[in-house]
Structures are given as C-alpha cells and as structure tokens.
Image (cartoon, rainbow, N blue to C red; front, side, top):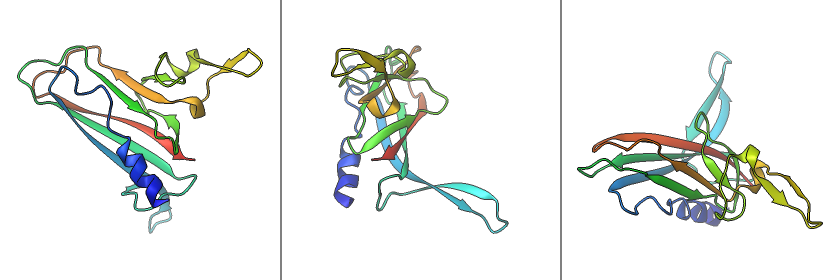
Length: 154
C-alpha cells in the first residue's frame, strides 16, 4: 500500500497548469480521520498520509499563486484522478470532470458512460478520470488561492 501512496502522490501534478502563465502550484494530500475529543464531541482531523488503506478518505489541496508580473488569464488546472482513488466531491467548487480520460468535459450530472450493449447510463463519481478548474477571471499578479477535492482509496 505504501507503493500505492507514492504513486498517488506522483500523479497529483496538474497536467496543464504551467502552460503559458507563471502560476506556481503546490499540491498536498491529507487523510481525513474522524475522531472524538476529550468531551466526546466528534472531530475531523487532516493528517499526513503515512499509510493508506481502501476506504480511507483523502483530501487533495491545490494551492496556486501567480508568481508573474502580469495577470494569468484563461488559467486552467487539470488533475488526473489517481487510479487508486475514487472521486468523491470538490467541496463548494463545481469543477468540470471527465469520465473518458479527458476527451470530454462537463459537470458530473451532465455526463454519461457507455455500456456494453450500446446504451448509456448517468456518470457516477467512480467514473471520474480527470478533474478541471477553468478560472473565469484572471489571477492577478501575486494573487493566490486554494482548491480542493476529495477522494476515497479504492
């Protein structure tokens, strides 16, 4: 499973983020653990993933910063989903996803997956192969932010 974690971290590098802009990305992965505090209240902790096992909930954090002197216009971040992880959600953001290796994009509820008999079914989170954020406004010089998405170890 440690090998799976290293592979998981290796494929996190966004594929289109460094194209024409000077936007710097920093990716982190955390394991989400449910626990209770001393008073018995439930708490959620984000921990460094030393070992992951099937069913573990992961939180992927993508910090971005425009290190250039000009606004970064039409910026896109595309992340392939690690093969050992099933997409869960992207919090409050509504990224585009692909269920066919990055050929077609849309919101999950708008996509379908072909079946062996030639029919199609609605896409499910487990079908997601890539996730993409297309910035609608330029990122100003020096501007920064954070995106996140969740996954579950298969």
